[in-house]
Image (cartoon, rainbow, N blue to C red; front, side, top):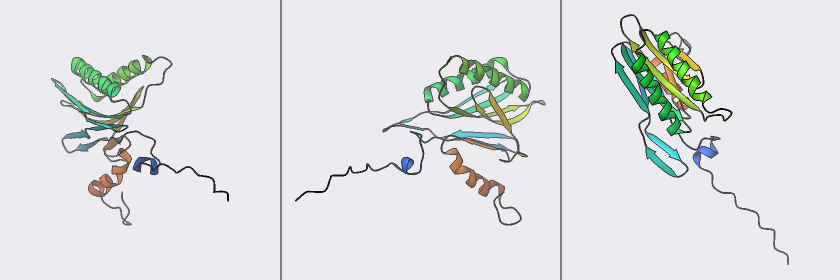
Length: 190
């Protein structure tokens, strides 16, 4: 009697694989505009394969003309931390007088950083950037991504002064809308 052929047994999938995520790690950074400033936060966990680490993914500087904060979500945490520290250091050294000056500085630094890779495409790095420049400078919240994306988010934009990045970022957008924006006239989230 012939026995049936042995079929390979499928390996169990991780929750991320079963949901269709291709990222090796889950990460999130977010920011929101407030009445008198901006709040920026990030998780501390980095997961790569089976190893986990706790790291600080938020960097800030207070200078004579204002305060700056940047948080990141990235596939390459070392590259993200390096660029975030360089951005904060440049903001501190140059002490921009306006949000436009800060935007130009961010764009210039990120573009130079990306060019240094030459023909190699750097891994994806996303930033949430917050700035508070008194004396007419303004308060700003931004989505940033090298080489040159510096997108200001205001209360009038679709996200209503909220930015989230990382593969966990999309998951919290509905909660932000529900908790902070409420419902529209037909019972639909704004």
